[in-house]
Image 1 (cartoon, rainbow, N blue to C red):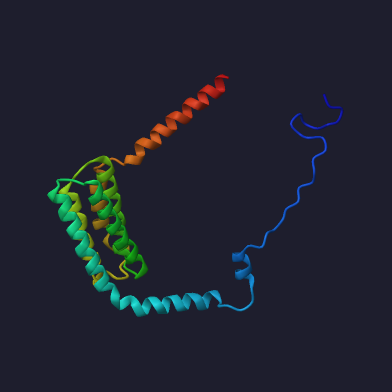
Image 2: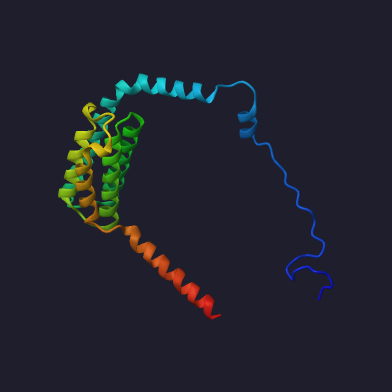
Length: 194
């Protein structure tokens, strides 16, 4: 037993904590003089994107053709195989991400909905030609220059209908979340009892 007023878990003669700031390569490069101002770097990036933006239609056309080919294989197999699941999800994600880079906000939103659908179908071992084709039709539409800079709110009925199709299929992660919550509750109950 201790005579002083320290808690049972405290060491009587704790050494003082010394905080050391270590200079990493990144911090030394970021703090050195010279370089480019943030606003200049952003302007250069915008200029670069503006220069390559003319290539976007050709890129998206190529990616859409590949996605169509993958989706046709899914339809031929009456569902996803491990290979088509990965290929379709990856290509849809790429199209979604490219849309955001070039100001095609609807491409990003429809692509995101499509990725969620693919995830739910693929992980849940479901298949819906109707849901996949509806997303493909929407993606073909919004990848066009007519939809550049169009706000999602301007075509909310389209997004609502796609979301409704996605919600028909259970979220595979929802079951995992429920299971984790049950396990957490069991642990809390055991902890309270002991």
